[in-house]
Length: 198
Image (cartoon, rainbow, N blue to C red; front, side, top):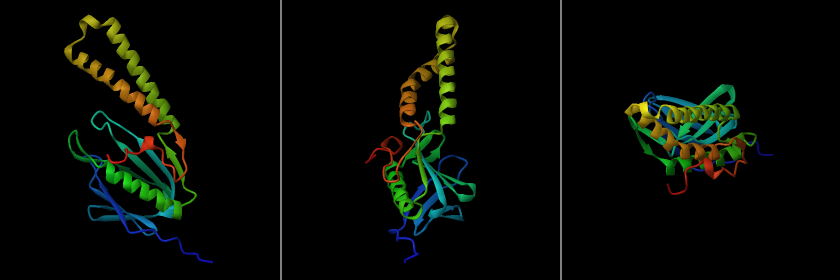
């Protein structure tokens, strides 16, 4: 009986920088591990040690097409991979095409080497309820301001109100895409991956 893990194809790499406070990280799936390189420091995680994967759509005011893949390995190790590359203040490069290829390749490798890994899409239930409460509170505040303080609103407050109103469709899209659920390893929900060719 063969005790060796099945072979994985050639190395697959992806480079990202999520925020100002992070260095450029290069993720490489190579053989039975994922290697994370960050400014001279290298971390390796066995794919068989990854126990949980969460893919989610996670937009912000400046990153409306933001997606993330969160990995959790044994020993409490957590890794976040995103499709946006931080260039400067409110300036991000969309790397969705390479991100999508990498996340799909990661799932293929995990199917072979970590068959007991659990796959989730969207946010956790707790996060969903907290964000829903925050958005409802914001909308109620908005309604109060519009109904009762309409004549005395300063210009800056009016701009904030307009931004909140414009965020309503994004919030609805976010809730639709981020309902927490589990998925099978070969069936990544399209809601939590950038569209093909983007």
